[in-house]
Image (cartoon, rainbow, N blue to C red; front, top):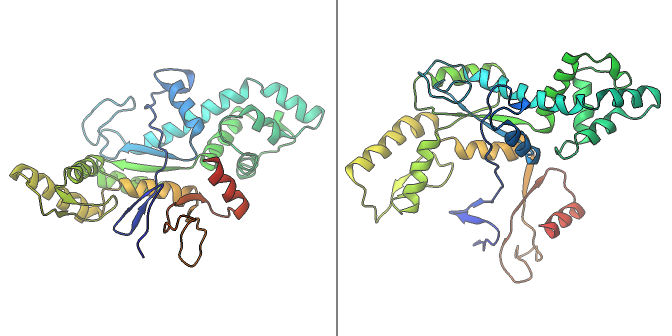
Length: 309
């Protein structure tokens, strides 16, 4: 059937649903203390449900983002560095009121999960996230005074992994050392998506100029009928096809975005309709809207989501 998209786009039968991405500034060591743009970055991730951590797979960027010789830095260090920065930021917030929290839990038997949740309000962290993190790191929620500084850090790291799950977008796969570094990242248990942002940008711009036929996430492209590419442009596209698409299957950019919503956040796609036989709304438009909602959302919750947009 032919759909009539309203809140999204359909390209050759593939529905592309708009999502919100927050472009955060890069971190430097001790950003959690306010160095660099650290406070801005950490404030931005309050709004995020999941994180796509873009790392230089070629190891050609140092810890402060400066260009260095490929292979100089291990991208795994960037992964661990980000986790620790976020964890220390959370620890810093908790430590400001930790003594009072401990007294309220141990003296008047208030719930530790609720108190931590209140302290971290605004970070989109749920009580279930806090409880799961405590259980995972095996901490006693009735004796917080027994928690060491390291316990608090371990708790914060686990809380970030649960409340704001992360995938790694390993960029610059076209450069030396990238393939070995990606294998190493995967061995360390990271969820890694090899990417070449530059290639994706070239392809998107070529589509805008109607030079090629290509959809985000495609494993190849074709020249359009009205294509007037120069020899230099043809050469560039050939390099992308041979070094990126044929080797890695895609540029990885769309894969990373899809994985964030479907793998990390467990979203499903829902098409609300009024006529279930024609799959149409009250204006007879076929499958006009598509929404991403968490798996397990019921009809009442879905109705609230629609009417609150």
